[in-house]
Image (cartoon, rainbow over all chains, first blue to last red; front, side):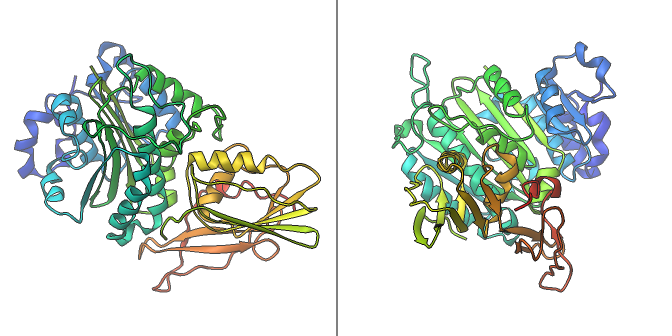
Length: 296
Length: 157
């Protein structure tokens, strides 16, 4: 089976290839639909799957087959996403231990981290902090005028991810979810040792924001079932029972250009969205990169 | 625009109840009782944020209003209009949209402008007639929506 490097090395400048080869030559790549006949021969979670302009429902079908990193070939950020996928595939533990620094842009990460105008990391433990978190995020986004068109999208995404981290993620030692069915205006406060993080960063043509929680409690099977449910119909159906409304995940995926879920079981869950800086429609209609990766 | 706390006020004029909602429709939103007449007009221009919990609260509130009450919504912001077609039961059969904002985007300058489309002037039962919207450099801007989704709520008044 061919590796990412074998197939795609020309995507990167010649002077970078020597550095990239040791990593990318170890990551197998398959293509859908051309390599469909090889799917049964591989461990799909160890492969980067390259697709072309397929829609969300079809991406979800591939995730059902066990693929964890689905990358759209026609995107401008294809090379960067390939690189990030390769890192996530090859070094999952190192990645999960500290994902934020090189989450997006691989070898650009140093530049981003050293520039305070390009990244933001905020820790939080309380529901009552959410309004302040969103205010800070709004100020951060306003530093880049190109986000004006998608500011609302970003704030909505952050809101959903923060609520998810506070209400859905925490589990008791018994394994029961502590706050899942509470009204979402309940005043939750996690101990400081269980603080979550909201992060955001600009990388040239996009902004990525996400939340990391220290629980790692997101169950792959439940997530996939939920995804199938929420994308069954053309419009989202609300939950009127206790807890959340059941709309957040679909909203994140529909409105973002990239979507990431990275779970280190029992240790951390990271949920993130990437938005291209080209308006609402571009983010809705773009063929989406999707990553749903689970490690125990 | 900064996200501000939810506020709602209502008053009666003749046979119409008027409701004005501003701020964030989220888990803190408290929809109050509205004294009802034959018609209700809801002005949503000041809504600057809505999340999934707020969406549910909005739907539950709206579902309280039964026939023969007719509900008209005016100056609906983009953030609400996006949910008209993407969330079931966000609008009910009683609702008619009289005016709503359409986002326009300029690929040249990165600007966004929200244009207020008014029934009878810019749209009717089945058609739309919008003026050209230009960016700060005079270039024509594109509608920043997927038309078949964004406008799917338009129906006869």
